[in-house]
Image (tube, rainbow, N blue to C red; front, top):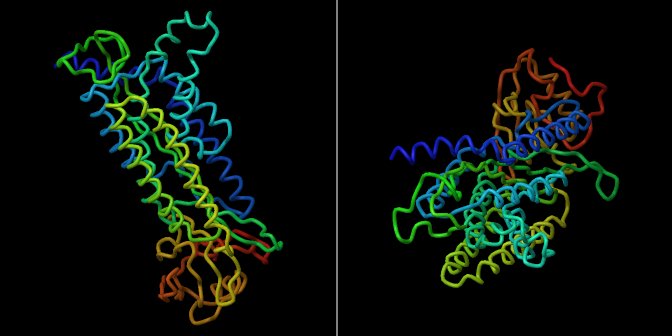
Length: 395
């Protein structure tokens, strides 16, 4: 038991020798700074805090990491340092695009698998490197196990996405009118323990390790795997789009898991897992783009003013207002534009009662006392730019 404990402790230390954590931190710092700059340019204020891209992902990521740790250590799945460095190299390469779309495990692990397939065709002098030999010994089944579990994690993160988890943007439509859109961005770190060749742990059963890459003893490493996804929503509500993509991703994960199980008995199926994963991912987002080809959801409405975004922890958030809802009246005063909403709010005194219409067409009322420190529009952002001079102010 002491040997296992020491290996787990050393495994945590080995995590810092891998680039995953540094890539994740650098990516979220870059993306959040870029987003905040765009929010201030479009809305005159920061809407979401820094690092909101990975907010709300930790519980799902940790649960997935525990599952992978059980599969990796108790199940006996060995990963080598050259393989982990290769995956991190692919992750760094796709990070240069600045889009979390490419951080899906289907792409990072799929590209890694394709790289392993071309290794035998490298020039002869390259074949003599020890790390090349180690990579050539890597079975694709270990990669497909990671892919299937991580794809389930992606689907759960998508299904858990709420209207407050996507980022509002303002842009010009085809006719030159202002329309709104939401960009979903989720970046998660999935920490899991995995076996590596070399160490103090020796096999305790004839079948263990199940998937090996050489060696007669094994160590442990904590891998902070980086998982990301990004999608743009313009023709439907952000929550509807996120859950639809999530359901389709879940079905793809089920199919990939079945093929992965089959690859333990028929190894060529592992290659099918990679191909099916990439094709399924492309079909899911092709379908999403097709569903987006309709009238913009966030646009001017003759019966009210559409909420494009809600600043977290603002008065509007405390009142339960949701992006996509239509504000009809403020203290019984009809509003049809942002300027009318602003004027009605200024004339309500110290109390506001707002009538809103939700996505299902049902009306409801929210109310709240107004304070001097409140944002001038309660923390709401709208599709049309404000017509008054200042975009940020207080009562």
